[in-house]
Amino acid sequence: MADRRRPAPRSKQKPKPRPKVDVPRLAAWEVLKAVRVDDAYTNLVLLSVLAEHGLAGRDAAFVTELVSGTIRRQATYDAVLAACVDRSLAKVEAKVLDALRLGTHQLLSMRVPAHAAISTTVDLVRSKVGPGAAGFANAVLRKVTAHDLDAWVDRVAPDRGTDPTGHAAIAASHPRWVVDELRRAVGPDELDALLAADNEPPRVTLVARPGRATREELPGEPTPWSPYGVVLESGDPGAVPAVAEGRAGVQDEGSQLVAEAAAAAPLEGRDEQWLDLCAGPGGKSALLAALAAGRGARLVAGERQQHRARLVARNLRGADGVAGVLTADGTRPPFREGTFDRVLVDAPCTGLGALRRRPEARWRRRPQDLADLVELQRALVGSALGLVRPGGVVLYATCSPVLAETAEVVEAVLGSRGDVRLEDAGGLLPHVPDCAGPVAGTLQLWPHRHGTDAMFLALLRRG
Image (tube, rainbow, N blue to C red):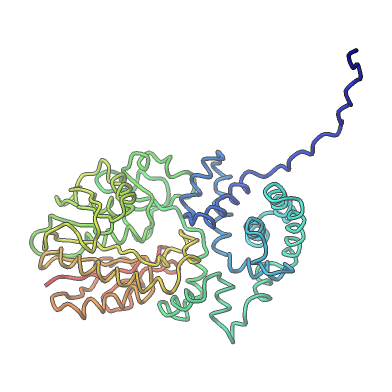
C-alpha cells in the first residue's frame, strides 16, 4: 500500500537578505584591492572599475576622490587606525583594512556624514568578509570619529621639533626617505607646501595640438603657462569632440611645457629630424609632432616596451609630422650617429614629481630604485647625444625633483663628455617664473609653485 504520509512542512523562515552595499564604495574598495594585490595603477584600474559598475558623473567623481585620497593619505590613516585597533595593523585582514582606510578618509577628509561613512563601510565589510569583521569595523570607525584630522595628527605623529622627518611622514603621508629627498631638492622652507601640494587632487588639463585644434575650442580656463592648455572644470574629457577625435588630449601642463621647450631650443642649420627617445605613452610625442609639422620637420618616436609603443601609435594616429613609431631600446637605438637635430629624453624616473596623479607611486618606490634609474638615465642621455648631430640639442627631462635624477645626472654627463655643453634653458620658458633648477641654466617646475608636475629640464648641445 502506498505511503500516503504528508511530507514534512518546509520551514517558513525566510533566508536573511544579503546586505545592501553602496555601489560607489564597493567600486572604490575593488580599486584598492587591485592596487594592493595586482600592483595595478590607480588611474588605469579606476577607469575599468567605473565602467564595469556603470558609474559616471558625480558617482565617478566620488569614487575617484575616495580612492585617490585614501591612497595618498594612507600613512596618516594607518597611524590613526593603529591608535584605534587593539592589535597590530599587520594582523588585520587586508580586505578589512582596505575598507577601514576608505571609511577613515570619508570621516576625516571628505564631507560625508559620520553615520553614512560608518554604516556604508560596515555594510561593505559584512558583505565581503562577514558579520564578525563588520562589528569590528563599526567599533574601530566609531573610535576614529573621536577627533578631527588635525587633532589626530597631533596625537599620532612624532614631535616636529625632535623628529621633523617623522612628523612630516605621518602628517603629510609620505615615506620618510621621500621626505628627505624632497627636502634636499626644494629646501626646508618650502617642504611643507610641496608635501601639501602632493596631496591635492590634480586638475584635469587638456592640450590643443597645434594645427589640429585650437585652445579656444576646448572647454575650460586657459592654463597660466602653456599656450596650448585649458583646465577642465568638470565633465568627461573623452566627451570633448577634439579629444575624442585625437586632435587634443589630456596632458599635465608641466608635460606640455617640456614639449614646448624641446621645440623652442635655438638651432643653427638643419632642423628637420626630431626624436622622442622614450616616447611612451605618447602625450609629449603628439604635441611635438604637431609642433614639428608646423615647421616642416618630422618626428620619430621610440619606445622600448611594445604595449607602450602601441599607446604612442594611438596618440599619433592621424597626426602630420610623424616619421614613424619604433619599438626600440633607447640605450641601443637603431639609428646612425648624428641623425637627428633635436632629441627629447623624457627618461624613466621615480615619478616623485607626479605624486598628485600617481598616488600609489610614493608607496611603491624604494631608495634602492634610484641607483638603477640613475644608471639608465645617464645611458639614455649618452645615447641621445650620440644620435644628435654636432650643433644639435638634447633636452633631458624627468618627472622628478630628486637631485640624483636631476643635477647629478647632468653633472655626470658633462664630466664624462668634452663635446657637450649645458645651455641656459631659461630662455625656452621665459614666461614661467620661479623655475630655476638645481644647476645654473636648468629648470625645475613645482606643484606648489606652478600647479604642474615637478618636471626638471636641462638643455644639452653637442659641440
